[in-house]
Image (cartoon, rainbow over all chains, first blue to last red; front, side):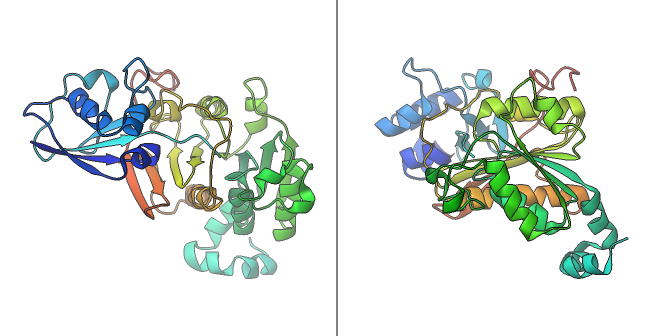
Length: 92
Length: 244
């Protein structure tokens, strides 16, 4: 199935724009995030800590709804879903 | 009542939202924390709009590396306190308002005093430690907070109404990493700062729909904005579980 990924700020730079990824039926948000991280070294670094954990400050959205970190492992995606990934900026 | 001078000065705004709303702007006290990339456009446009009292808070002095984006500061201001440099420019823009410049770096000890009595607080800081302090001060005092932040060509803004909408820690429970040198083009804080100033004007005049429970995300490379819905979190360490 296909899931659309919208990336913002540094993550968008790392990925190079929006993506449509092919993931297995019933894939979870965590599975999708891993797939996004595998698209390039920069994308992997932008999303994950060296430990492999998702960077804590990245905001996850699923079809326009905020997804809590704890839900990522169990939230299953469907064909045509949209996931948005937003790493906030901090400067002023 | 607006004076004849005021009716002239604010003619285009009175035509837009009426004399009473203009008077509300004239009675409003707004604290802008940060007189840098965001704070400069926020202060200039709020002064021009006729906000009665603009308070500027910043502990830094102007550095030459600030000048690409901190547009109230000029070459001759290098080495001068940012709040003094900014206050001089906005007083010249609008001598009919009160401008209070406080040279201080916001911390937990002074934040409540610096923001005290304000009708609205603008977060024009450059780090999340200061932002979290401001968020908690705003929640405690029940004063709206308009958040903005930038990096590179990217920016974000949202408006927080304490006790009603998502607060800064609901939206950003984990701070993004700090950087020694944050790359930025001056137009990014210009755009986000004006979104913040626009929110302040809307809140005070009761005009339009605020950016509450919504995070505006600006991508200057693509010239697009996105709105991400955000919501209060029951377990928010700043405003959850009846804390606010």
